Amino acid sequence: QVQLQESGPGLVKPSGTLSLTCAVSGDFITSTNWWNWVRQPPGKGLEWVGEVYHSGLTNYNPSLKSRVTFSVDKSKNRFSLTLSSVTAADTAVYYCARADYDSGVGVDFWGQGILVTVSS
Amino acid sequence: EIVLTQSPDTLSLSPGERGTLSCRASQSVSRNYLAWFQQKPGQVPRLLIYAASTRATGIPDRFSGSGSGTDFTLTISGLEPEDFAVYYCQQYGGSPLTFGQGTKLEIK
Image (cartoon, rainbow over all chains, first blue to last red):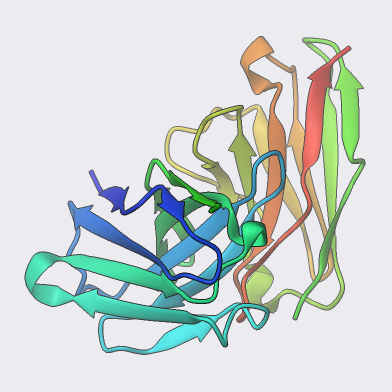
């Protein structure tokens, strides 16, 4: 069974940088799947942040592209998200997820999510 | 970017009734790569339907998806108490991936 687990600080100061990591088990980060980030502000809907492939290929939400960076650590089977210049609007539960496009399934497995609050 | 608009925003029904949720795309969804997710309070979104009409593993057959192009529907026949939740559609036929705003299915 594929499992994903987010980790990182739960509190980030305004204008700072949010950094999260997603550890993957039950699948290889070097598989043909894409590795996604989705966020959900408290009480609101889901917003796609973007995705990364093990080769370094990326796709971003245009509204966040200028502030987002993804990376992949093949040796530790994990991937990461960095979001710079954060504001209160970036407060959300951040989910990492797997997308299987080869099978036509799309986003199938999700992590449990981590609440990140932007506050001084 | 494809904008997905779900309707209604809130649907009030009783257990045993049939629920019909709509998702309309601003342009055609490539390969009908449209998914439906269920989310209960404090829980992770759960994949119900992918490629517009294929049930994900373990999803009861009372959930069915239909549609193509720009108009898609999630139907829940014979609502069970555990089906009352928020439902999101998502298109993954092209980047950026986008979600609808959600439909809240509540007990009448």
